[in-house]
Every structure is written in C-alpha cells, then in structure tokens.
Length: 179
Length: 407
Image (cartoon, rainbow over all chains, first blue to last red; front, top):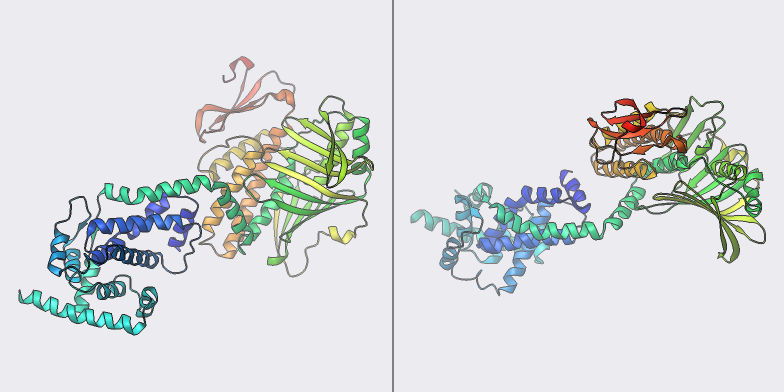
C-alpha cells in the first residue's frame, strides 16, 4: 500500500517520493546488480538506467505486484542487455580474472560489505545463466515459474540451471574450506 | 553448511554503502526527467487526475460534491451591480423574465479540469434540477431552503438544509437560472455604460446578436437569435470558471415530480446544514482560520473564485492520495467533511463580495501564514464609517484611521 502511494506520488511529480523509493530499495538493487555483474561501476550504471527508465514510463506504470520485485526484474533485464552489449566477454572471463577485476575497481564506486564481497566472488565463478537463476531465486525471491517466464525459458531449464549452479557452488565452497 | 544455505546467508547479510555523490549521480537524470515531465504534463496530469476521480468508484462521490459546490458556491461571486439596458437588450432578455419553466444545458469550464456538462431544468418560483453526464442530480427549492444531491450509481444522497435564511434576503445565488433572471432585472433597473453591444455573429448556423454585461471583473454575455429575439447562449465567466448556458428552451411542459425533494427509497441519506444568514466579518475570520487549518497554515493567495478552486483542487488531490488507504465509508465521510468545509469557507467570500464598492476592501494575505500578527491581511470600510477595519495575520481586528492604513 505504501509503495502504491509512493508510485502515485511519483506520477504526480514528487521528487521526494522518487528519492524515497531509491533509498528503500537501493541496497537490494545494488546487491543483485553487483552480484550479477561483479563490477560495481557497471552496477551503478544499471541502477541509474533502471531509475531513469522507471521515471520515463511512470505515467503508464501500473503496480500490480511488489515494487521491489518489479525493480529487481528491471535490474536483471538491464544486466542481460549490458551483457549482450559486452558480448559477455567480462562475464565469461576466467573466474580468477573476474575476482581480481572486482577487487581492483576505482574508489568512486559503492562500498560492499564483507558478505557481499564474498557473495560476488563466489558467484562470479558460476556461468552467468546459473548465477542469474540462483540470485533471482534467493535475492528477488522469485519462483522458478516466474524466473522461467522472465528469462523466456522453460521451468525445467530454470530448475536445471539452479541445480547445476548449486552443485558447482558446493565444489567452490569446499575448495575454499580446504584452502 | 549446504551451499544453498550459505548463499542465502550471504544474500541476507550483504550490504552496500553508497556515497552521496553516487546517489546523486544515479538519481540526477531521473529527477531531472521527473521535473520535465511535471512541467510539460502538468495540465495533462490534472486532467488525468480529474478523469481518475470521475472513474473511481470510491471518489465519484467527491465529483458529486464538486458539482454541488459549483452549483452552490460558483454563482455567488457574481457582483450585484450590473449596468444598463437598451431596448434591444430588453427584447432579448424578456424570455428569461417571463418564462414559467425552462430547460437548458450548462457547460462548466474550470481551468485545469475537464469540462462538465449539466442538463438543467427550471420551474417557477424557484425550483431547479441539474443532472451531470455522470448521472449525479442536484435538485433545489429555495423556498424550502433545501438542496438534494442524488448519486444513483452508489444509491447515496446528500441533503443540504439552509438555516437562518433572512426573510428579506434573496437566496438566488443557489439557483443559476434565478440568479441570471435577477441580474437581468438589475440591468434593466439601472442605466450606465456597463452593457456593451457585441454586434452580430453566427452561432450554430443562426445569426445572433450579442450583449456583454461587464462589471468588477465579471462577464456575462447573452447571444440571441436576431430574428426571433430568443436567447440561444448565455456565458458567465469569473476567473478560472466559465458557465455557458445553451440549448435554452422556455416554457416547456415539465412534470412537477422532477423537482421532488424526496429522496428515493433505498438511498443512504446524509444531511448537512448550511448557514444561509447574511455573512458577517466573523465569517471571514472563520474562513481564514479554516483555510489555514486545511492548507498547511497558509492563508489564501487571493480572495475570489480562484481561491475556492485552489482549495477544492488541493483537497481533491489530498483525497485522491489518501483514498489509497481509506475504505469507501471513510472516503465518503471525508468527502462530506470537505464539502461542509468548502461551504463554510464560501461564507467569507460571500462577505467580501457583498461589500459595497465604496468599502475600498483590500486583501494582502497571499504568502502570509496564520499567526503573523504584524501582517495586515485584509481591510475594508464598513458602510457609513470613516474608519477602516483591519484584520491581521493572527486574525486580530483593529479599527484604524484612513491615514494609518498599511502602505
């Protein structure tokens, strides 16, 4: 109800309402964007574009579900577009390179806490398709049916990606424990 | 720990800190776009809001309130003094004065809001019935001092009872047709230069002659079929509000039951009382107090029809926002509360408009907050007095000499 009111106020041109929405959901949006991209400056661009797009379409926007879910979906869509543009070069680079690139980002970017650093470095070692499904399931709390619809894949494919991703995570986490 | 649990834990405990400049960078374009949108689409947004109001089941009643308010309050800002008649003018207005009944269409145009069309009926002595395209009907009988608003879609009725009606006081401001008739009579009684001949013009394929009565910022224009000398269009404008009367047919056979004030069975009835006594200075003070209470402590920007519209729009906007969280019942109560408030506020406007031209009234309260004791917000000279009454921002009143008036 509160989100509906915020959206309504945005429609009426309230800058405060837009700022409120940003403050309320920025953490969730950044966690998803950073984990999917493993790059904070690119994550910034994604969140920026999501908000700009949100305002551009605000007049016709109708909130039917949760605003958080909607914005996270926008982030996931935007990340996929970024990846397509990049030809998935950085996403599919060697895991070690990704981890290193993530740690050597310019200081201007957002500051991730220890858990987020660990999450992104762990998830960066998964193929993007698997990482995406796992994050949408855990962070956006989407069902496999919703994820499948969003990604244009079958529910079984979404579940398979999730399962393969978890298998790989088990190996990664076991390796980390051994080290 | 299972990998799924570990990831869940990391997701839950993940956090980010953003520097202010990053927040600004991310939001800057969005906020700029929002501002542009606000500026470019402000008129459209207002229209959309009104359309939303008109469509919404919950707030349809609010629209009904506006219609009632416009019928009640909208016409009472007409100033009493109207000028002269010419023979031709007398000819074309005669049907207004002699008709026992009439039907007409009223088109209400308010800046920033979609046009509202009402189908009106008048029957002597002072019966009136107006129905909007939304199906909301307002029936009034000034002799009984009663106005009934019916909203068939919701089976809701609002009955307004006028109290303290002075015996010698004309209540014609509550009846559009009667108000027009009264003003024409006044125009015929006095002779000055305020009636302007507008010449000839073709209106809907008919050659018409027009007259404009102009005084104190008010405009009343009458166009009549030149050959038949029958009025075909009457237009009254005041600030952001324009009322157009057209499709006028005089002496139509109308069933008296159309003006029956009895609420049909099955309707939920709400009754409100309005004070119809002659407005006094204390009513103006009460208007300022209520206004500030409902408008974040501010006093009206102006004291005319624009003020009434400013208040109505602000309250409708608030109602629409709060309506997201209110039940239909709560919304109805709120709407009635606002309706009653607007009626109370209108008494201050009536007091000002009834002041004679030589009262030399002046309002300077725009931008002043209630409580600012040093700010003179309104002054006027009561009839027969040499001195002025000055109202300050804290609503205290002083009598002052003309030379001591605020500069």
